[in-house]
Length: 341
Image (tube, rainbow, N blue to C red; front, side, top):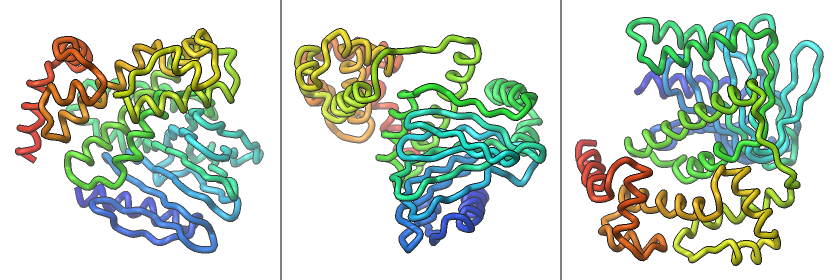
């Protein structure tokens, strides 16, 4: 654990040459805090394994800032996600700039023959998420008795390494946006269970990147006629549903609130979240219920009503369908885990 923290500290130390700030320890993690003439915000880095880093930028800088994408070894794969703000990927050789749009993914490769960097634009509230895998280091770490998942990931990374000058710009990804919102609530939790939860979200982000890349490279790209303003309205509705799932939502009430026709509302939820409006509301209630089971002493009946449902039997049925475990058993197992921690 201490080695992981030190590796994260070293990464932030390298970044501090480009983003001026002070490295501070917050709980079990280090953060590069920026609060001077160069801007405000922070950069958080977590090292999960040898060669696997997750970096979270939450900044507003006063000058355009270039961050080289490089690692100590010759090969690294970067999975990028722009949640908010203006940032660009710039190739090293021809100074070609590619804009990373909000909610867009990108996968790039760096090495001795091909490298580039990120440009964070001045006076922009930037929230950018970067997951880096130093492939040589990672492969060595998992060369002896690799797990099934490690073998699959190695095969995927090897395919990416073979590609010349890899820069893959992905489509809109709202699944990662949902993970990012959850991370913002857990980013300063320093309990062991909290750190495991945070790490789990990072792995889910990586999984979403991989699935999207495979889908897009096979030509299966989801499209919509919705314009950005309409997408933003649907995202705002989805955020409210996630924050307050107990409210009795309906397509009609959401349509009136957003000013979007019911058909367009359904299209938007299916495009962004691959769910109907009703299914999205139900899933939000289940996720809130899972959180209450995990973090509170409320009994099952209290949780049922607090998330906007009225039937305990119906709740138990749909909870088991989603989590493969009935609520009572889930709560008991979680209590046992907390006791062991």
